[in-house]
Length: 318
Ligand SMILES: [Zn+2]
Image: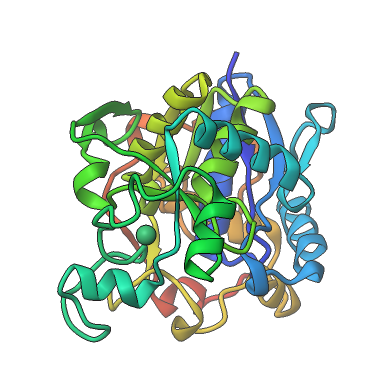
C-alpha cells in the first residue's frame, strides 16, 4: 500500500500551482488506496510566516484534500535535533565535512561573478575548497572565524532512478552541485537532509512533488544511501507556469485559493479548472473530488508544463 505526503511550505498562500500538485498527489494516492501524511516544510527561515501554516491547512481542507490524521503531522521546525544528530553522524563517519566558504567566495573560486555565468537556484557548483581541511565544525569555526555548514562528499558517478511520469533518469550530483550542503551554517538542516529523514520517519514510500525537484532526487538518493534509509519511489508532476514560461507566482496575478474563494469561486469550480489540466474533466464542468478520483489515470498526465492564462479565471461560475 502506498503512503505519500502533502508537504506545504508556509512561505505564502496556497496558489493554483501548488494546489494542482496537491490535488494530483491526493488523487494518485487515493486511487491506489494509499494513505497521506501532512508535513509542514517550515525550515525556510525568514520566508516562513507562521500564520500561513493554518491558512494553508484551511485551504487544503476547503478543497477537500484531506490527509490521514492517524499518520501524524510532522513539523520540520520542531525536529532540529533529529536532523543535527544525523548530520553529525555523517561528519563523524567522514562522509561529510565542515565548510566556511561564503556564496561569493565560491563564485570567485569557480571564476564566476554575481552577475555573469548562469547557474541554478542553488548557486554555482561547489569546487570542494574545504574538503579535508577540518574534521569538526568547532575546528573550522575557530580557525576561520566564520560559521561552518556541513557538506556531503559526492563522488563522480551517475545516480539513476525511475520517475513514474518522466521515466528513467540519471544525474551526477558531483558535476551539478558538487559537495552539497546538508546542514546550514545557521544550524538549520538543509531541505535535502530534512526531507529524506522525514520521509523515512513517516514511512513514505512514494514522493509526489513538482518537477523542479526532479534532479534533487539524485542528491537525496546519495543521502539515503549514506544514512541507510529506504528509497521511496518518485513521481514528479509538471509545474504550472505563466505565459512567460516562468513558474506561477505573484507576477502572474493573485491566483491564491484564498483570494479566489473570496471572489466567490466554489471548490468544485476550481477543482474543474485544475482537473482539466490533467485531462480529467472539462474546465467549465463542476466536479467533485469523487468524480475526479473515478476518472484519475496517470497515463493521461503529460510531462509538458501547464500554462496558466488569465482565461482560466475569466468566467466564474455563478
Ligand atoms: Zn568551503
